[in-house]
Amino acid sequence: MKSTRLYTLFGSIASLPSLTAATNIPAGFSARCASLAQNFHPNHQTTVLAAELLLKGSNFTNPSPRPECIIANPILLVNVCRLRVNVSTSSTSSVIFEAWMPTDWERKGKRFVMTGNGGLGGCIAFDDLNYLSYLGFATLGHNNGHDGDTGLPFYKHPEVVKDFAYRALLTATKIGKKAVNQFYQQTLKKSYFVGCSSGGRQGLKAAQDFPEEFDGIVAGAAGANWNNLMSSVSYYWKYVANENKPLVLTAEQWTAWRDEVIKQCDLMDGVKDSVIEDPRKCHPRPEARLCAPGQTWESNKCFTGDQASVLRKIYEPFYGNNATFLFPGFMPGDETTTSLWFATNAPPYTVDWYRYAVLNDETWTVEEDFNLDAVDYANKVDLYNISTLKDLSKLKATGHKLLTYHGLADGLLSAENSDRYYESVVRRMGLPSSKLDSFYRYFPIAGLGHCAGGNGAWYVGGANQFSSAPATGTTVDPEGGVLLSMVKWVEEGVAPDRILGRGFSADGQTTLTKDHCKWPLKNTYLGGDPAKKRSWGCL
Ligand SMILES: *[C@@H]1O[C@H](CO)[C@@H](O)[C@H](O)[C@H]1NC(C)=O
Ligand SMILES: *[C@@H]1O[C@H](CO)[C@@H](O)[C@H](O)[C@H]1NC(C)=O
Ligand SMILES: *[C@@H]1O[C@H](CO)[C@@H](O)[C@H](O)[C@H]1NC(C)=O
Ligand SMILES: *[C@@H]1O[C@H](CO)[C@@H](O)[C@H](O)[C@H]1NC(C)=O
Image (cartoon, rainbow, N blue to C red; front, side, top):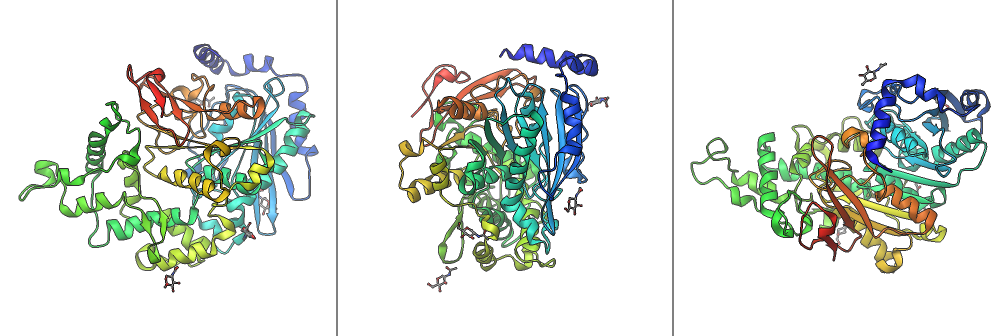
C-alpha cells in the first residue's frame, strides 16, 4: 500500500466527513448495528450501553469518567459500528468493553483483535481501536474492570483485582467474540491480541493461561514479574535515591546525565546515532562528571559524589532478602524517562498496589512501611497469579503464537525483564530457541523507548504507537511491523525473523529503517549508510 495515497485519502475525507463516508456503508450495516442494543444478550450478565454507527471523519468523544484516560479524542479513520457493553464478572465487579467493527471486515480477513491497557488502568486505548479498525480488524478494548489509572477501586474489592489480573480480559474477549460474530452474521476467522506495558503483561497472561482465545498474541514491554516491578521502583526511590539524603536532580541534570550516557556508549556499536544498540553492554561512569573540590553544578555542570553514587546504582539489580534476585536495574540511555520514578513523592503505582490491592491498608506508605519483608509478602500472596511468570506449555499445546518485543531504550521498564522471561521459558520448558521459534519469538527493539517514541527506528506497528507516530501512523505502511508479521505467521505460516522499524523526522518523513533482530541475535552494523536497513545484519 502506498502510504502517501492513504494520507491524501484520509486528509480529503476528514474535511468532508458525512458526504463521502456515507456512500461506503453497506446496506443494512447501520440498522444491524443499532439493533444490537435490543438483540445482543449473550447472557444475564451482559448489558448493552451503546450501539451506534460512527462515521469516518467524525470526532469521537472518549466517554471515560476519568480524566487520565482522556489522552485523545480520535477522529474516525473509517466507518465503524461501535458497541459498548457492560458485563458483570461477580456480584461486586464488572468490565466495560467497546467493539469497533468496520465495514471492510470481511474482505480484510474477518479478524478479531483485543487491545490492552496500561499502568494500573483502566483506560480503553481508543487510538488503537481507531487505527486497528482502519486496518480492517474488528477491534476491542476494555476497562480492565475499573475506570482510570489508579488502584483505589481495588480497595476491599478483591473481585476488581481479579478482573485486573486476568478476568476482565478473558470475559471481554469471550463476550466480544460473540458480539462480532452476531453483528457480521458470520464466524470470525482469526483472533489476535496486541498490548504494551500492562497490556504486554495481559498478553503474556493470555499466552500462559488462556492461549486458546488468541491465534496470535503480540506483547510489548510486558510488565511480567508484576509484584517485583511494582516494588522495584520504590526500592530505587527509597533505598537508592533517598537512603541517606534526598536525591535532588533537576530535569536539566537528568538530561545532562542521559546525554553523558549516550556519549559514553553510543559508539560501542560503531555508529554515532544516539542509539545504544545493546545497552546491556553499556556501563556508564558517572564519575566522569564528578565535581572537583570547589566545583558545583552551576559552575561546572558536574555531579557530587552522592549523586554519582546514586546514578551508578540505578543500573544495578534489585535484590531482596537473602540476596534473592527480584528485578533488573534500569537500562542506560533513557534517563530522562527513568527520572519519572525519582520524583519528590514515592511512585504512586507502588503506593496504590500495596495500599489497595495487597494490604487493604489506606495508611500504608513507602516512607514508613515499604521494606524487603513487605516485598516478600506481596510475592507470597501473588494476587490471582498476577506475577505472570508461568511457562508457555499451554500455548505450545494450542499451536498458537506469541511475539514479544521490548524497547532497548525503555527507561521506565527495563528490557532485561523481557530477556529474562524468554530465558526462563527456555530453561523451564527445556527448549532451545530453535524449538521455541515455532510458537514464541522475542524482538528487542533498539532505539525504542517505553512502547512508543525514541531516537531509533522505533515504529514497529505496536500498541500505543499509532497516535505517537507523525500523522497518526496512517502514513506508515504497517507491513513488516509486529502485528502484520504476526498475521502472516498465523495465516500464512511465514514466521518473522526480523521486525521492520522506522524512525521519523519532526515533519513526519521516514528517515530511518532497520530490521530488528530476533533474540538472541543482535542488530549489528555492517557498514554503509546507518539510516538504511541494508547496512545492518543480525549476528
Ligand atoms: C474535531 O477535533 C478536531 C481536533 O481535535 C477539532 O479541530 C475540530 O474542531 C473538531 N470538530 C468537531 C466537529 O468538533
Ligand atoms: C455495570 O454493571 C454493574 C453490575 O452488573 C453495575 O454495578 C455497574 O453500575 C454497571 N456500569 C455501568 C456503567 O453501567
Ligand atoms: C532467608 O534465609 C533464612 C535462613 O536460611 C530463612 O530462614 C528465611 O526463610 C529466608 N527468607 C526468605 C525470604 O527466603
Ligand atoms: C495460580 O496458578 C496456579 C497454577 O496454575 C493455580 O493452581 C492457582 O489456583 C492460581 N491461583 C489463583 C489465585 O488464581
